[in-house]
Length: 332
Image 1: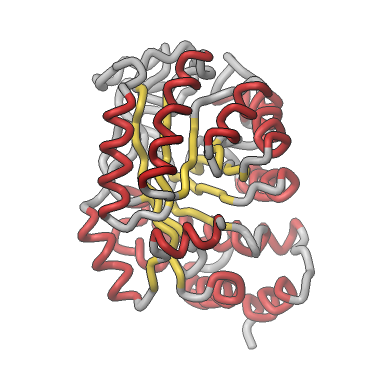
Image 2: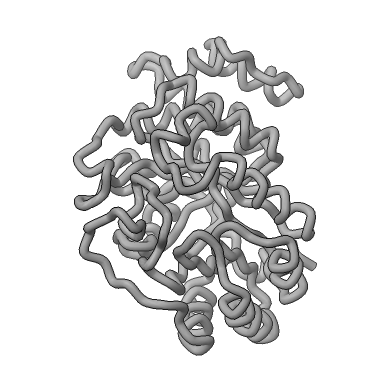
């Protein structure tokens, strides 16, 4: 039995891996990556079998953001040529929900740029969510920025099941990425989400000049936050942002990162997210041996691969898509 299998068995028995073991995962020899992914799959299989959760983003408000996040094309300091618009109307959000439902997407994610939503924007989302729930009953995730407690409660009452607010990077690296809000601001929003009774979704962006220890710290921070869903994004550096031209990642390292997150957060939904097409390339299918969830379609200001390609990939891997009906049953 190789060391990765031994470690996965220990995790399945309830052991938390040490910092040294975590570092050894990120330092796994490239020749052993398939063994590492197979070991990660033993953990994934225990809790999720061969099921894959599908998610789709609705970019409900784009650009016009006062924040200075170095990775983001929508920030105040970005010169990237993107579409900028204020919150779309209810009909547009409903159209996106219908498309997601027709594609058998389990979770529909309503995303808006900005530091945090105005009360009017929250009310717009609330109206749309109520109708989506009445019409389709699908799982709804909202990602609107930093929340006030009363806004979180209003979203929960409307039927929002999950709220996303990523920590993005480690506490020690946060100041290198943005100075317009703090790491604690992000953690505080996740805590407000939990207090309101919504499922907390929080993840990271890997490839922003962080150290391997930073990556380990991110995984442990999300474990401490008890995030139910963890999106792992890989930096897709956009021209016109401060991180323009940064390309630190390679496909095998990305797989090691996903394995690390599975070993540290064995029971959680781990979603291979933005940048997977660019950074994993032809190794994308292997990501599902650690992750159990993906985004389908486009992201916020970058394109994903065609839905038919995602469907083909999952089918050829022998994985099973968790249907809308199964997702609805899990919420009942």
